[in-house]
Image 1 (cartoon, one colour):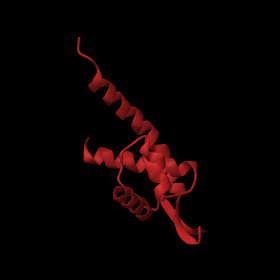
Image 2 (spheres, rainbow, N blue to C red):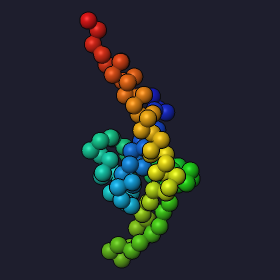
Image 3 (cartoon, helix red, strand yellow):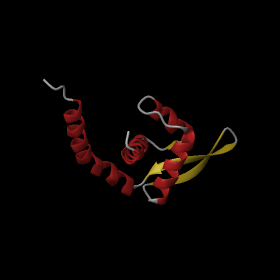
Image 4 (tube, one colour):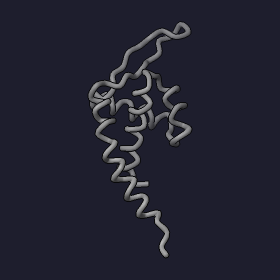
Length: 103
């Protein structure tokens, strides 16, 4: 898969997970694993990039006597997620064309 396309889809996938609830790295990885294969290091690079773009914010909470870093989708992240919907429709049409059986 094209690297840029995959990168964009992974970013949107992480935003989608966070739109459902705030979460932490391992849980995000677990939630994504049923849909996409992403390594832990790749996920943290995505989260860092999304944070730098102000699409997610972070906070820490104690869990089992340790601080756990949680990620929260920002308003800008929600807008980005909504803007993706029409783009996905275009991508879906291209995929359907490419996969169409020739007669």
